[in-house]
Length: 185
Length: 325
Image (cartoon, rainbow over all chains, first blue to last red; front, side, top):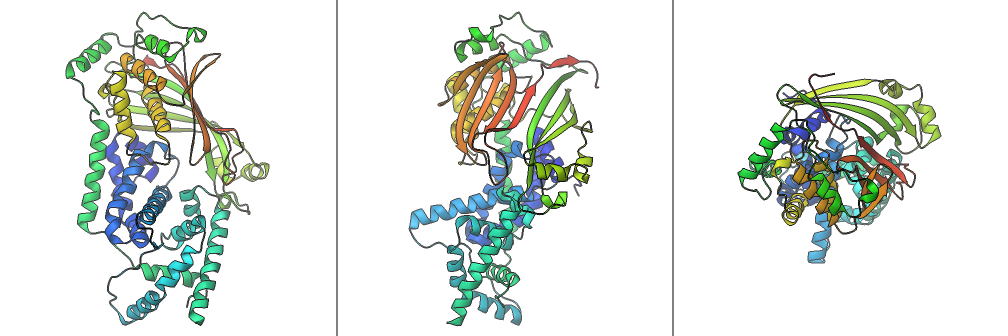
């Protein structure tokens, strides 16, 4: 196993491009999961690869002192997903979901229950996500769907960690309110 | 179930499942990445090998020797074309077997620390400017780099007070030397592989930047790539001249003069700096002396004041030495 930090790998890739393959191997699965959760698995194949192509092309801008490339990669992923959703909206002029429910089968009874509950709520969740500002939505989804820490979201979006906290709090409050209202009905 | 914060997050995760890429997806992505790597080191618009070999032979014959050149003083440079003509007569700095190209670079750049790392409350990361001095020895097979940390300059006095005496400051104590060595490989943007006719070079550069994120204007990508090519001390004289000619044709580029050289600047709008001015400064021989990037509006979220130069790199004149250190 390659014991180098991401920063060391990125620095090596400045001189010898193939080192960047290590970054790909380390993070492809994580980035894919985030992208697929946002836009579905069919488009995720292509767009996840695009994340790494962009990151590779821009690797000279990576801060070599950084220990991890994770937030940096998620920053590209967030932009690419946002671009994709904008294009979809322009093309179809249709409602495009901020997240893509997973159609995969549930394997346990508990999962079936959870999936049923979640699936019922899917339209409402997407509507609630759409009620957020773009900044709130991207911040919140990087945290909740991308499973980044506050600090990582801050690094990915180049915003202060306090802003991350406040955006996530606002997003949760709005979503809680809308979903609660739906459940009341 | 969804009436608490964790419940909302959990609901999203359950809703979106746990998609995992299959082997075919992973392989396909890797193939695209490998193609990009090959493209980076391949000839964008390859010339015949004859001029390439001729330039290498010439370079080897004049190792570290400057050709007889006519040096323009900055005041005499009326257009970048003039500077390009002079640049074409200046030999690159090439080390022979067992020698090194040594150069000192002074750099100041934007860095950040989380407030948690500094043990202070409030919102936002702490940003500051860190200066460093970089000593580089480039040999045939390896590159040795010594980075000597310099001072940290803060924008926010409260953050600075927290930084002083902290473990973060102890880690980054001025004078600390960070050494590294890495294998020498062909320059990713190998200067020998680019065409030297201005139009062809411009086309090759446009092709090279076409796969970069679209949020940065092409003109900015081009001047950035020009800087990347010009900062390599091994760049061939005719290519150095050609790159300067390409700069001359980039929309929005402004040529200016400073005491110690000629400047080429481009102002553009792109994240993360917004209204940004990027400047390359040359001496009278067309050698790159300095690069700067200034955020005219600053960045409130990052706590960077308007007009801050967030990147400033000054290149010393490279020289050939026989040993490390």
